[in-house]
Image (cartoon, rainbow, N blue to C red):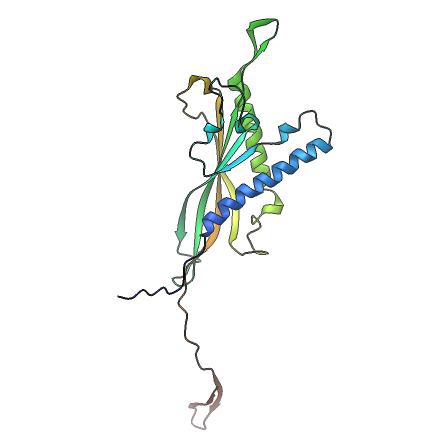
Length: 234
């Protein structure tokens, strides 16, 4: 049996393109938010910033100090973007060229803060690290939701005006979680997960069809009511 697909499949599927686009949108927009905070004279512009990773299976390895100090990428917050799953829908699809897809993309927002103590009494905790981390996770998730759901990104810039890939996007769920950590120094790490549902189209390789001859036709009706065609091949 000979191979039927005679062209090299040299492309990404659209779920990969959308995932990378989501990461790029967050990285570009949050950097701009920090710049706007500087312009606005905010005392801590880093409150308008976080780092972004894509498809990181162990994102908390960014917390490089084993003593749990705020350091590495997670010091300013970290968002890991990854593709979770999708399902192919019969309505709106065809068996030849394109399939309508509903995909789920995840934003895991990680935060880590230490407890703050009274400088005059080291045993007196002013703010608990777990609460500070939880509020920090809220901050990061807030920016993610506002950026991704802004009107400018209705179709993630992959929609009607551009590649005509994305048809709809919406945040479906958000939930807090505490990542499992074997190192007790990391017990203040808190996460907030946002699930983004995206409706898009996937394309597949096509058969190169033969060019058909076109016909110039003229339709007439005879006196007995029969339909008659005259045609000229081109």
